[in-house]
Image 1 (cartoon, rainbow, N blue to C red):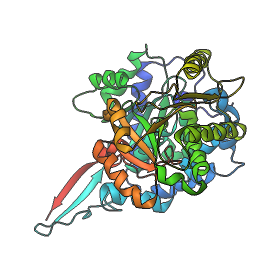
Image 2 (cartoon, rainbow, N blue to C red):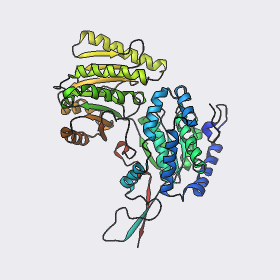
Image 3 (tube, rainbow, N blue to C red):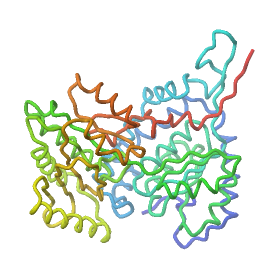
Image 4 (tube, rainbow, N blue to C red):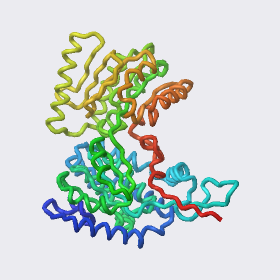
Length: 453
């Protein structure tokens, strides 16, 4: 694989990286930002990002071909899974979507360009200018790439230079994105830097932590706490820790032969990024009393996952993860043989997919990699009781319900604590302007200057 050595992450494995090299790169980023980025307009920035997305979506684009050819070995995802996930992400890059994000989070399309009136005060004359940090440091997770790409995109919108410290084994797709930006606009690419090194090299983190104005981190709760403890009091910190998601299927939506259609959408959510993201469902609850029983629905999902494996195969797993799935399967094979209300379906000869049906509504963590629980429940109230242990860590609830029920159910879920409710089939496809963990992602990066006159 040949990529130009634009970034530290492009250096060969034997290259020696030093704290001084990191510190000097931070100085370069700040200079480049002032020269190439600070005075760019919002329209220009959106145009660059949209053009980058258009380039990626061209089937013959060299960086796309490189990513899909070498991505499976570098990331563990199949080429089909990478293509589907990245195409879905980049199709969100439209003028309309970026403007919706700016209006929602900042209240005005031009407040990053000049003093504007996002919320005009009738009593006092005041305009406000939004400013992004000079240098953002991102600590990214290694399980899937989209959060890193979104963090980089938000940083570009705020005219911030950025240092992306990638998790071990998680640099490949962020590198591709950085090269994509460099290809479209080299001066913008000069405001980015990426690198990766083992956890033991804390000496390389120190120049970043002491220099950055804003630090974002995505990963386990333990990793977030460790980084937070080392952030300078002068810097702002934004952490995204461990989250889980699940789905709920109303009995009413399974009428008139719609069960197969809903099962197809569940399979899409489980297959997206091999179920590894915080937005992926660990379990799907099916309300009793529908035209298809929860157990019958579980069988349909198993059939759809088998079909999905033929067109979008799961990536190859390391031996410990395959062994964990095999061990969990063995447990449910024994239980299903002796316990009413438990059934198991799985891919023959591989660990590619697994569906476990249980009548017990207590939430169960999946071992992921397309291992799904289908649970039966009398109603949403019983679901929320069963999921009470994870209440404070729920990200997304996928919902399949008729229109006349959906608003009531979404309101119940919101009051219970879910940060996002979306249609089943779209759990791993949040809109560009979604509020990550219930927070306005773009607005959290901003500092305001008020001009009163």
